[in-house]
Amino acid sequence: MVSKRFAFLVILRIVLLMLTLTALAFIFARTELFFNQIILLGVIILQVSELIRFVTHTNRELAKLLLAIRYSDFSISFKGSKKGKSFKELQEAFVEIIEAFKKVSVEKEAQFKFLQVIVDNLKVGVLAIKEDYSIELMNSEAQSLLKTSTPNYWKQLQQLLPHFTQEITDMEDRDKRLLELNIKGEKLQISTQVNRLKILNYRYTIITFQDIKSEIEQKEIEAWHKLIRILTHEIMNSVTPVTSLTETMLMLLEENGKPLLLEELSEETLEDLRFSMKTIQKRSEGLLHFVDDYRRLTRIKALELEEVKVKGMLDEMEMLLKADAQKESIQLKVNAPEYLSIAMDRKLIEQVLINLITNARHALEGNEQGVIQINAYSDQNHKVIEVKDNGMGIDTAKMEQIFIPFYSTKEQGSGIGLSLSKQIMKKHKGDLSVRSSLGEGSTFYLIFKY
View 1: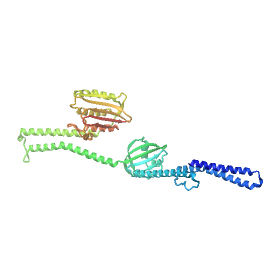
View 2: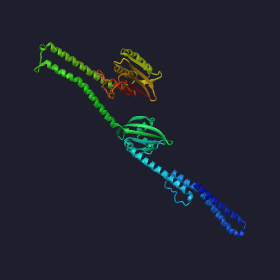
View 3: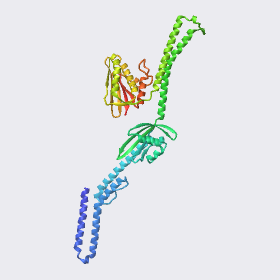
């Protein structure tokens, strides 16, 4: 409707212009009508100007709309223009577009403010750096942890905190590190993660960090309490019977508070004394073994790393342990690729594997179809050696405690094997983990990171 009306008005203006030109041509040669010629010429100029203004009015309005959108100037108005009904629908459409963009802009601003409030209330420091090294975002927690107001550029932060910024620069995408910082005399232990991403053709580095010193201290206190309880329990178990037997021996050697003479001691009394002394000796030896186990747990030697072909190492271990396994009707199987090699302290890792295989053999006692499968493989981030058995598995409640020092599910177990093994893997900057469920066996994973 708008286009038809617009075309009609354009044609009408052209027709009027043609009529005026015809009238001018008709009187052009008549000198007595000179003033009429000037008047008609002026009318023609006005008609041409009006035609041009009328035709370009839509373009001007459209340009005004686009500029308003470009500069987010939504105060502009298209109402009140007296151009006739032909532009009414067009102006209304322009107004609707402006209102829609205005609404989107308001919602966007509200969302930004909402997210800004959330980020500022996070108990995690957040720092966003643009590819031109300008700092786009630094929330309140980040300012509090780093003890600085928001700098404009990364270089300013480098001057204030050179150690922190150097660590961040050295970190890869999605890398995590625990940093120890000294900021204005205060020591912090900060868990830090770096993420790099691209948004609207700009590259950003997002740094999140959190002070976990208090959490670490709390965990250390809990660990000490747990260790003290275990040590106290074990020592009391050994010392209590020793104290009781010592009292018994004193009672046998005294009468009415006076020591007995040698000839007054009966053969039965001497036998009781001998038995008591042997018992004390055994408990003392047990306590010495316990202390020695604790010493071994806390003193793992420095690693002697070498590149080890995993298949060759596992084949040798199979030959070493196969005979004992066959005596218990247990199959020992090895599966590892020829190419796989891992940087490790071979003696320590062999100690871990022997411990895990020994545990697997105990888990398969009475199982006539027992199988211990040792697999080695690699994926994108890790190299893994796994020891798998088809035994009864581990109860969920016990599985959470098997890596605790001196905890054992076996009556004669020392409770240091798995804990020591986990420490060895931690020394290799890897981990020892387990998956198990009752009736479906257990799998222990030696995880080596690239």
